[in-house]
Length: 138
Image (cartoon, rainbow, N blue to C red; front, side, top):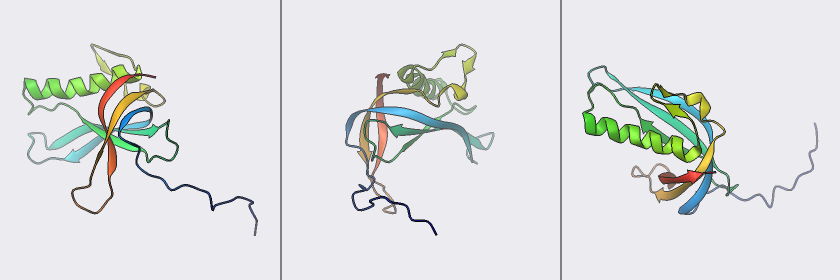
């Protein structure tokens, strides 16, 4: 048995970050797929982006999903989805070109975003932060 000397009485609980502008750092990005029988190819894809709030060490990490265009989207929906991803890349200073995007470039990148708080509609979870809009790169 080992004794580790540390005071656990003063450890703050984790919480959501306050609404407003915060610095975020991307921890990981995954291309997320889920079944979508309503789509012609049967699969919905998105970028799952997990971020830490670097200016609030006690804040929960934030997970955002950025929908990827699919074959059933019209031009308006496709452009809306691409624009959200473009804002993310621009805000964190990640490179992209006309050929596409490289998701492996995102982890470690950071930027400033305006965070909001939303309540869990199901009542199973507490409130959570989400990115209302990206502001600028860190």
